[in-house]
Length: 131
Image 1: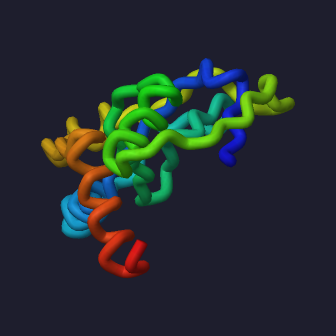
Image 2: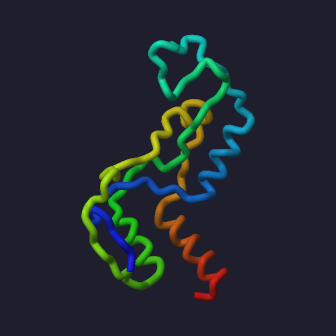
């Protein structure tokens, strides 16, 4: 049985591991520059005078949690037992990776579809567990 919070009314961004690896490789050769216009009195947490850069790597496309669960169910050929629960304190209803800076700086955007990624994961899982 899986716990499904907010009765399944949640949106999340799911990213296949190969896309994460590819995105990481794309930024390895990019030497970051400090922001010469960084304002110490009104700092922007996404910027600094120091030479660093943090990138989000994700699909940039939030989807309904129940659609995600349905995709896994379809790939497995079975229906999950679900325990629907209310929203949890501190959780957010919708979130996704903002990859605008990654695309701007590298031209890279994850392309793996959820169906393909879940299918690959299920095949890997079955091969390694015999289930």
